[in-house]
Amino acid sequence: MNLSVRFKRTLASLCLLGTLLPGAIAYASGYTVVPGDSLYSISQKFHVTVNDIRSANGVKGDLIYPGQVLNIPDGKATSSPAVPVNAQTHQNSSFYVVKPGDSLYLIAQKYNTTVEALMAVNNLQSSLIVPGQQLNVPVAAYRPVAPVTEVSRSARRPEIPFSDADLDLLARLVTAEAGGEPKAAQVGVAAVVVNRVKSSLFPNSIREVIYAPNQFTPVSNGWINRPATAQAVEAAREALYGADPTNGALYFFDTSAKSSFLHSLPVSARYGKMIYAKAI
Image 1 (cartoon, one colour):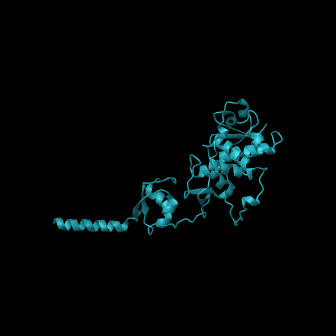
Image 2 (spheres, one colour):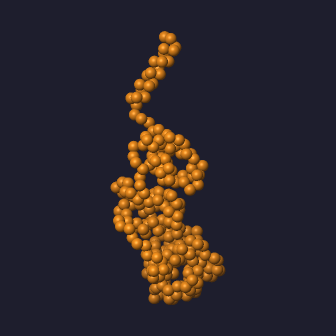
Image 3 (cartoon, one colour):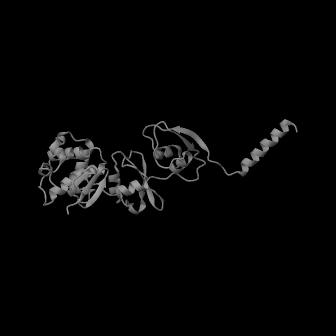
């Protein structure tokens, strides 16, 4: 058979086969991730869904990194519309996009759930989140039905009286005790001090609670004199205005603590390496 005729027949067969096979995923382009990108922001830029990008790149979670090259499906080939933020996407969860200043603790408080639940449904190994990151929120906890008027901090009453010096001292304790821990752990340290001030078992001021004999290691080793971090100041403020991720704890310690007394107390919460406990 003439080689030219054989080639034409082969080409015709391939074309016919292409019309019979189901359409494969079409890729519009490759995209190189830049700092600040998230799967959600990229999906909005190319008018595709986050799940389409995950499928096209074999990505199971939301973790991407600058310099990574992603295959972007053709927006015309995708069969599902882009998912709107905070819209219910399936039976068990809704989407939330992390904003600057967010923490898992604050998001959990907003949606009436727990840090542990958010970490579980998003397969997170730590509490670290970044602006633009897309999180699943358990739909059972999803509660923003009507807009809520935000009450300014100045219009709210603190849990206990405090001065600027008290706030600074409390934030320095938070920095010394839990500076490298998640935000919820830092709020927890401050909340324990607030709970002690309110309890009849301890002194009735922030300064007296912190400087009570043999209570806090940073007082004895001098770390209490180190300046507070901005995050610790914010954590202290949140506790002073009512945030208490410890569920009323009066004690805290980390996983390296050897005290049999502390380990005998009923645990009320855990964040990072920090453990919070109530009085017996």
